[in-house]
Image (spheres, helix red, strand yellow):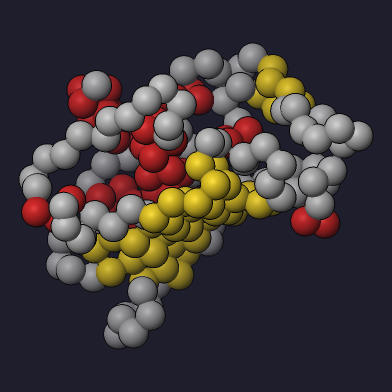
Length: 171
């Protein structure tokens, strides 16, 4: 999992296939308040589903981003994933590399940016892509939301609501 400019995380890489995580069947994400624990879960969900359970909890209310002095503000709903763009950043990315049950490697990405790649640019619509990793004989490349959602459901075995229930039970 590679995270760039999401919420409180400027850059992080988490390799679930390397020690110590690969050596454990179960692990705990722990840390101080505001250290990014929930953001890690958000990023997994963004890469796979383009949404986060945490933001859905506050559905519908208005949220105004506070940006640097002199910049215009973005008026977003509290459940809009674009608000996860780290303050002062012009773009944010999440990249998740995972294997299906047959060992086929996939890369899921989520990206959002400001227009003109400037701090005062309007936040654009997020983009998602899922594709097979380079070198895989049968190449898949999905960019349409319905295709991505169906592919994730078939590959992971869970849609967003089912995945959210798993997270709820984990808390």
